[in-house]
Image 1 (cartoon, rainbow, N blue to C red):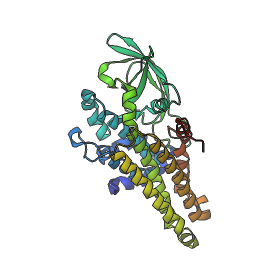
Image 2: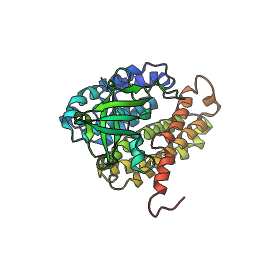
Image 3: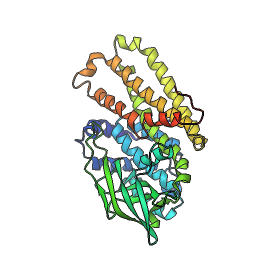
Image 4: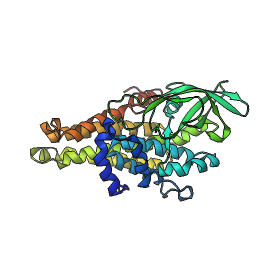
Length: 359
């Protein structure tokens, strides 16, 4: 698959990557930039306002953006994941109401389902509870880490347990819902332009019109492959960029590292093919373990790639201004293992399978 991002967007991302990482760039600008470039419509059926294709095209788009800026790729992943939730929702009215603004980047879509994905794997309980009230619900709870909570307006997807223990639902909560409070941006080591914050819910009303799916246990396994597959695009893009940076270095390092660079590119391409084939065949809906393992392997390739970039650059990687891009990618690579679900959580889920053998 070729990179679908337009040259003007890629140039803008190169110019603003440092600011999006350290927080000096205005985070309000990023989402409309991606929307104006048509990025959010990639892999979205034309009948819903998109450009057609499938979710693998969106994975490639996220990879192309992440190669320039993981902060931008992180925001892109959140927005596109939220769009995917609406595409896979039976609530056509909600989709029709929210989709146009999401596709153009006029409003943010925050994928607050990290807790839900961990709950699905048996790693933690749901953190939001719904008590019935009239024809709807009142919600209470907290989401401690959510990305793309754009100050100018957002909708956040949340998995919500019924107070009577009868199951859970998935809903879209608007930023201006009574009782919904967004914290200040979290003080991250990098990716500070991603509008990442916490959300507290205190007696927040929820109407049936805002329910993405009434049965989380049925719906979450259906959407999890897209959630994780799109997330893998971040790793693919960052690994590609570091491998290319290593290959572009001159001098003795170029010859010594030629073979390791070639082998890493081949392994990365093989993992990309496995992801693409699994998503298109819908193989991960009934068998999540291969997708978990693929995500773990991609994170390992990212670590190897930035290591090769460091070796190829040598001491220049530790000098300003030459090393600024490398330093940002090194921090970005450190984030890949802790994106929810983290590698530790994925490994714990794999180890908990019946008949699993500890490595």
